[in-house]
Image (tube, rainbow, N blue to C red; front, side):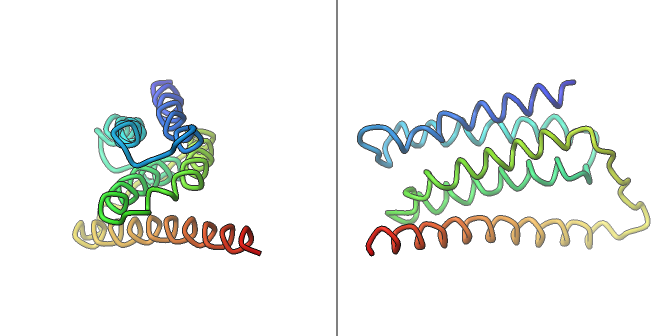
Length: 154
């Protein structure tokens, strides 16, 4: 029950950042950074509570970790690149969809983590997989933005 409550809270934390780009004068201002932080706190809290006993192997856990890592990479890109924040109208709705899928799959049984597997390899596998998911997510959103911009120019 606590996971469902945390999932719904994390989705609610994503909603203000999702609506922010549609305000009258969208900008990478103080409000953008505050709402981005709030959006990241929701999934981070879910992960903190759910992963306290140990690593979880289910689809819901993987999706929530991907959502948080995507938000972190988006924040880094937004801080480093002048126009990266403009991906927000496409990224945040996508992250909400992923979060809804994660919430739906909360009750699915998880496979136990194999105790015989070397922990260094498991950590390496998780890190590479997570980096792949996050880069694929941001890349796909950027590609969609290019397609939409190209279509608007025609």
